[in-house]
Amino acid sequence: MSMVDEFKAFIARGNVLDLAVAVVIGAAFGKIVTALVDGIIMPMVGMAMGGVDFSQLFVSLDGNDYATLAAAQEAAAPVITYGAFIQTIIDFVLIAFVIFLIVRSYNRMRPPKADTPAPPSEDILLLREIRDSLKQRTP
Image 1: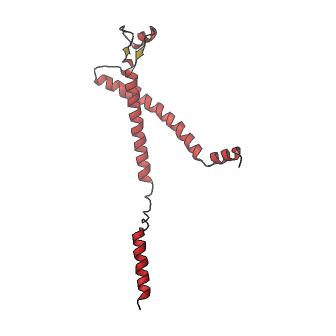
Image 2: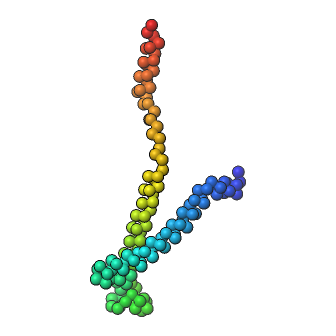
Image 3: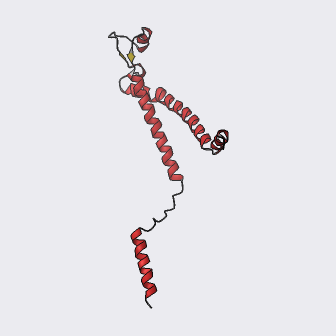
């Protein structure tokens, strides 16, 4: 089988298409969650913490004090934007939680697997064989 034929068979299985759809939907969902965190959750958290805007939290590494993150970036100062990091962590937690809920719901909707009994152990098989041979010997 040539490499082109193998690739066609791989694509035709459907798993690649399912994966592509999942990636596109996941990217769109990530944008939705980011908008939710940036536009709704973080302003409420900031308001509850005394009006803090998390997107503006930073530490300047050059030793100078800057009034805003924009001023520090305009001065080309090296900064650690830990507020953006906090927002990204909240994004991740929310996305992970929603994915957990989706997987949990999917697993509950799936029909339960039929419990197949485990095959008997070697000891049981040997005992059965002995029992059957004894039955054959007795008149």
